[in-house]
Length: 448
Ligand SMILES: Cc1cc2nc3c(=O)[nH]c(=O)nc-3n(C[C@H](O)[C@H](O)[C@H](O)COP(=O)(O)OP(=O)(O)OC[C@H]3O[C@@H](n4cnc5c(N)ncnc54)[C@H](O)[C@@H]3O)c2cc1C
Image 1 (cartoon, rainbow, N blue to C red):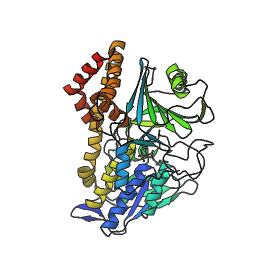
Image 2: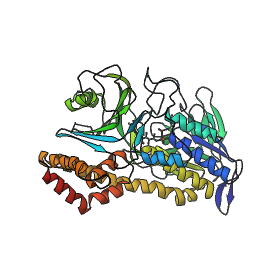
Image 3: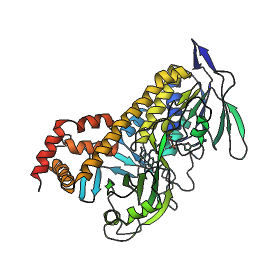
Image 4: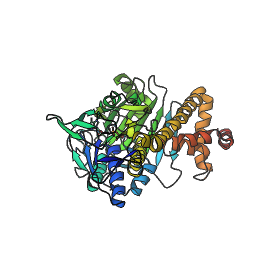
């Protein structure tokens, strides 16, 4: 029930919307569409084909470190989604940057902090109370409360309508395959799925995002008295380990999530990381070995998709565009909101998505170029010479002692790079401003 109007396909009352994937992007798309439709007195049948989403049983870490940056939490609140205490694992007020030359502990520049959550039901045998709700389930419940219907199982195929602008069909289900027709298909399958490839095979021009490997494990720290690492800080490591581009340790209640990203990171890189003396000291300050209780190897986004839309089809979240290496959940929200607004206010034709949705994805992709530049600069500067790197770390540490919060140029840039809550383009601008170098020189020279 999408009708041509003024040359556009639009969703009319009673239209059937099929959302493929019940992760953050899919659930948020349903929330945005249904709440705005209600406000404008319209009704749509929204079905979320959820894959494994919504599971509260079993185990699983949700293929993510589970950090919710404060701008994401703020935008969720604006959308009426509040985080109950039972979802929050830890409140993050600090980042620790660990290098081979020493470490620096950064305090949040303002009152706003990030939080950590389990995206899935948590690791095998998790000691966390069964009443704790995982974050993806919370989002899905919000979508269901708005009127969406959840169909478990995977979508296996999309069959375009032979007539241009006609409704596509979906084949779904695990054992019993079924078919359905939709006025709009929303691809919210993420990257760790065959669905983006299926959509690319339709041949309308969609190219899935580029990806990079990652490894993630959960370390159980509760039962080991000596393994009581920071509970309010995320640690980021710059240790020049071969093959590892990014490494972090994220605290949860009784666990630490290790995340490694790199072109070909695998078990060897993970072993080298966990054996590194700086890491061992950080994980278990008093010595000892934590237990690895959960392990996964999701792909992370490395570049945005090409043409994530067609008539009656739009890809959102990781399947479309996402911020490079940080705060992907906020990008899921931003793309889901933009796609829902386009469908509701403008139409579901190719031209509508090209005009109103694609610029949002392009802005994320363009910002990622600044991100690449920034990460390259950090790598070059901190890796240039031990003398320079040590001066910079000292200057950052001194800024925190000498200058008031919000007026610490180097600390603030580092903080926002690590949280991902300020566009990379803005951080690039700050890195190029003379104020930063004045502060680094002043504090760096003052330090011994
Ligand atoms: C190692 C790692 C750590 C990360 N840590 C963070 C972090 O701490 N904070 C942050 O903000 N971002 C993080 N990200 C990025 C973040 O995970 C993604 O940006 C985010 O999950 C994207 O949401 P999504 O809904 O698009 O996809 P996903 O979260 O991947 O959800 C897709 C859903 O679709 C389902 N699905 C897939 N195929 C089908 C199908 N055919 N039919 C039906 N359902 C299907 C899947 O089961 C899943 O439930 C991390 C990424 C990686 C790889």
